[in-house]
Length: 102
Image 1 (cartoon, rainbow, N blue to C red):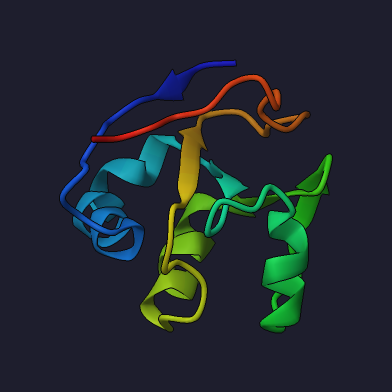
Image 2 (cartoon, helix red, strand yellow; image 1 turned 90 degrees about the horizontal axis):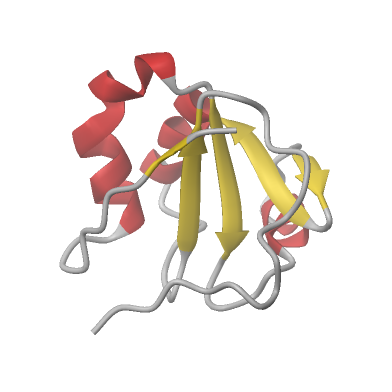
C-alpha cells in the first residue's frame, strides 16, 4: 500500500483537503486515523450521521466523499490525522505509531 504524505501544520484538515481536492483524483481512499486524538474515528462519523467503512475502529472513506463531509464542518476540530491512499486500507495505523507536530 502506498501513501502520499504531506505535512501542513498551519492548516486544518478541511481546508487542506479542499486545497488538494484536484490532486486526489488518483487517491481513492481516505483513512481517518484520529479525530481530536481519538482512534475510534468510525464512531465519530456515525455520531454525525455518516455511514463509513471501518478497519479496527478507524474510518475508511472515499477521498472525494471526505472532501464533501469536510465542507459540512462537523468532523475535524482537534488533533486529527488523515491518510490518503490509492488502495483501500485494511488495518488501522498501529497504536505505537503517531504523527506529531510542533
